[in-house]
Image 1 (cartoon, rainbow, N blue to C red):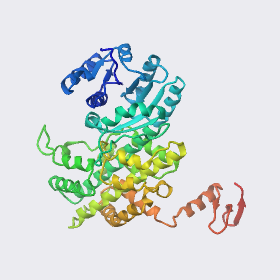
Image 2 (tube, one colour):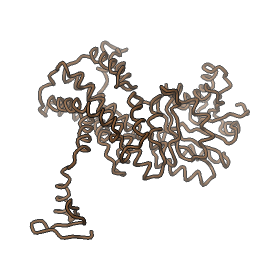
Image 3 (tube, rainbow, N blue to C red):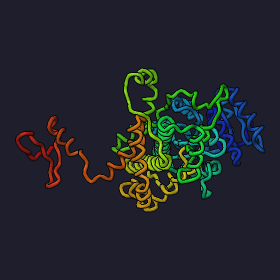
Length: 480
């Protein structure tokens, strides 16, 4: 391997690491790649020779010492390894680094792990950045959305390398920006994935209602999703759904979608989002329902048995307005899912002192990432004047938009219930909307129940203080 200085080193030359390394090299950075597998290192070098105008912009090696020596100071090492082996990679690399060098974890790490690693490496005088990367294989190669956070002093060194390699938003801005201190970068990416869960589930519910419930064929649905992608619903997930709905089975007849087993996998980031929301007391029911729906889909054998045992209603009766109502329902549900995620980020930024800019988060999601969509422009605009309590649903423009859509959401959720088509994420979005707009909720009864069986106390509307009642006799004040 050449010993002349490389600008950045990539550890882990699998699909994401190799593609992001070649992306950085194609934008002018000199990139050294390291992998313990000689085959992957050589494949990276060969791809650089084939894909780059200047093949010497990127080289791979399986020699760790040669890799480290080839990096210019301060050394910037980007780890693109699975979350489960990040600590091992850091332990292998850090003894070769010097004070002021920078380690970036570009994988899907859990944000508490990022915060722990930040503290550990600070003790070694090393800078650490936890960076979420979204866009999949294609995004990594040609422009992902990137969400770095951690040690702010390192940002000035990595920014000139990352900005040219990022996706470009419709207004020409690069889809990478500093997310804040601590685990902010991976927290934002985690919530991105939680929103992704909700959006995918909501799209699937609309597909199920129209296809299984109302009898729309895949050709009709392809045309419908393609049409939606030209309007306010435009976004990556709508676009790829239209493509999926016309993909032929390359190993048989008919459409591939009909041959795919209906049990969705997951890697944990959706569950992490729900866990963080529970910890912070932020309601994210659309995301939570999507996580649960994947778990239910995985009960495949049980569902086959239950299908013959549990009775249900007749199918949905199609109507001339069903597709229009479905579009409104999907737009409303997706908008609510985004706002729940953004509210969670806002609460975490305050509670953990991240200093995350919410409008910046929305703006860097407009290109490259899986949840990119046209409505993110409006979501970003909602944070120009921060909305009440960090929740963008209190923005007048967004609340007015939802006011025009909520009827469709209500109708579609009702149609699903009548037709026996499960719509957990859309129903959860509607329940959240109705709960948030309710001046009074039945939590007063829940508080009375808690006090009745557990003496947990309650507050009153008509006078201050904390109260406990010996139910059936009377209330007494308490300091509890």
